[in-house]
Amino acid sequence: MKISVILGHPQKNSFNHAIAKTVMKILLKNKHEIFFHDLYEEKFDPILKYEEIAKDAKIDSSIQKYCDELKISDGIIIIHPNWWGQPPSILKGWIDRVIRPGVAYEFAETDNGEGLPIGLLKAKTALIFNTSNTPEKREIEVFGDPLERLWNQCIFNFCGVKNFYRTMYRIICISTDEQREKWLKDVEEKVNRYFPKYKINF
Image 1: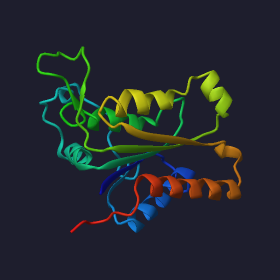
Image 2 (image 1 turned 135 degrees about the horizontal axis):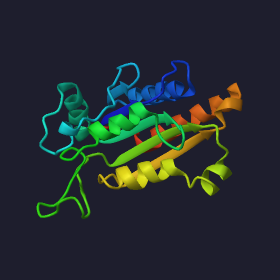
Image 3 (image 1 turned 135 degrees about the vertical axis):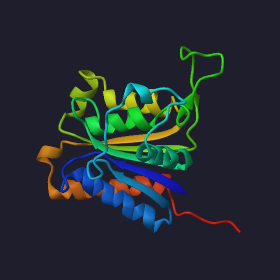
């Protein structure tokens, strides 16, 4: 299977990077083909220009590469921290520029954009791994868990990916090495469950 893995965290020794390394290790062990992007390392340009918005717009070749990979991916894994109830701006820019009409969704020919979209993504499963310093009770009761709404309802359901799983590891700023090791074991278990060893049928 082809799996897109997108990482959005600027600090190389962050727990998000540790999650990404664990994800990559399990996917490689399970014989999947990986499209891996560390957006900060790649200096991804998050600015969506007006000329790029339309479905038939000419887009930069560097962005086209992300789009082409996403279109053929059988699964998607995204890793990022919770910043103000949102992904980091570099990842939000990736959403704006890559989760685009004609790639991830489209509207019926007679629909000008006011109706229900037609999801185009080939991927059957999307996993989101988040980190946060906000207690779970406050996240849900006060803020309404905005990342769940964004990724599950606003993006992947919109684009036709129905098998969705998201987990939040918290509270990062006071976590111990032992706690982080347990969390990484949980990452391994989730990746193995949703993207098991790829078997080629002859």
